[in-house]
Length: 107
Image 1 (cartoon, helix red, strand yellow):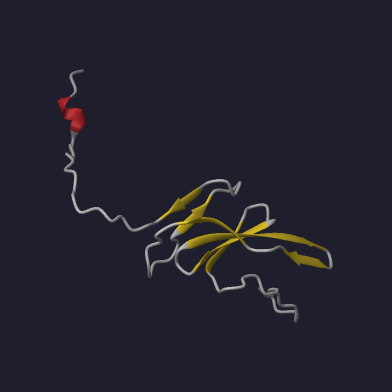
Image 2: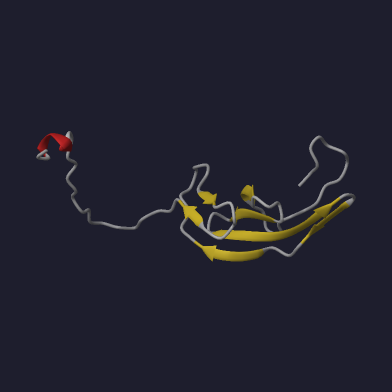
């Protein structure tokens, strides 16, 4: 991590690489995908002249879809996650899409 615009300070966040970093809305936590299989969280303390990085901790493992961006979307409170994953399913379930369904409603 580095200040923007660059001012010389750099901090290492992950210990084993990471991708798709995203801040929690309150700026106190940073999330990232590690190794394409784990969502990680790091506590951040910052203020005037202060920047402290906590120890990365895994939140959960998932079969993240490879090669795509925005595989994880984090709610503003940092408590809910929308994750794009692979589905290892060999069967499909049909569904019906009804167009102009209002035409079939009696008024």
